[in-house]
Image 1 (cartoon, rainbow, N blue to C red):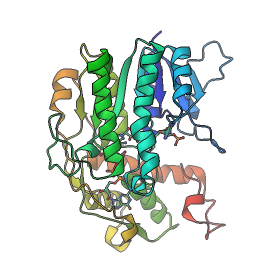
Image 2: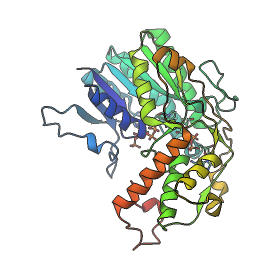
Image 3: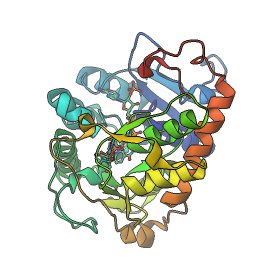
Image 4: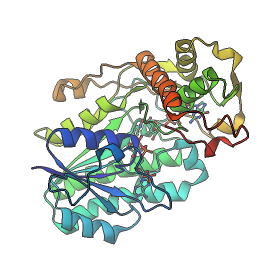
Length: 344
Ligand code: NAP
Ligand code: G4F
């Protein structure tokens, strides 16, 4: 039975990747952070009591800031594949917490690579690189496009990209960078723009909110569907040779397009609800990310099927459904601030 270790298993991508690998017959180990409240809601449906002899999902406490713990875990688990998905992944937040972002999103990767090397584990290694690394370089962007990061997050990802390549060249590690463009789903964190919009659409439709405050509506993104992107990650580690790949849909949509499509799907006119708030602007913006994934298509047979307009519909439907299933605890507590509201 192949064995995989996923850092960031509690995140959007980690949860879909864990599902995929379990379905393929893997034993899956996940790194989770200790927190004072449960942070495993995206993977609770996969969890099995470890006393059950058929259990194939195992969770371990750890953190990318703790190199000694990573060495201990690598030695104990001895995985065939390591997927490094953990990161402080929010670009706007990286301006508020630049040092922490550098420590986890950047240095965290070399701690993990070094743990693989020191533990002497013979595994294949995936690094979650990002289209944010291209930053100010205009689209279309592919594996040969120069990097010009525009945030502490983007700069930290560039560091991780290069140390991953360096461990490939220096130590012969089968290490690959997946340079993924934005990918979303109903499991997307609630403060990324797509989920913020689709969740607000559902709440406005239900009469729970009226205004949606947003930043730059002119930014262009290439939004794909997360379950398809984790399939691409897995394919990268099954290839004959280690190399780096872009995953993207090639779509070219503004934030405004996504907003309009989401409201329209719920039968609402977005211009009646969306307001501007400069707090959501970034000190430096990435104006346009549109990917060219022809290498992944040619070498891995990977092609995205869900494009941005359909993605908006999938996410709005899921948020409408989640509201129905959760009931409406807000009605009795109308003044509860947004961040305290239980969400799907
Ligand atoms: P996400 O939902 O924000 O998940 C991030 C994961 O990292 C969570 O499991 C989080 O744990 C964990 N984490 C954060 N800091 C950690 C630390 N110091 N030690 C250990 N774990 C830590 O992100 P995602 O959207 O799934 O993205 C997965 C990866 O792909 C990230 O590296 C992201 O930067 C990168 N990426 C994402 C996209 C995209 O569009 N989604 C595109 C390109 C690249 P908690 O649950 O405890 O917070
Ligand atoms: O959804 P976003 O926060 O994603 P962003 O910055 O593109 O980063 C995401 O994709 C990267 C891949 O390119 C990942 F590496 C990264 O981890 C993350 O998953 O913002 C998208 C766009 C930005 O231009 C932002 O300025 O939406 C704009 N925007 C406008 N109003 C907003 C808002 N973004 C957020 N989060 N909230 C707003 O109110």
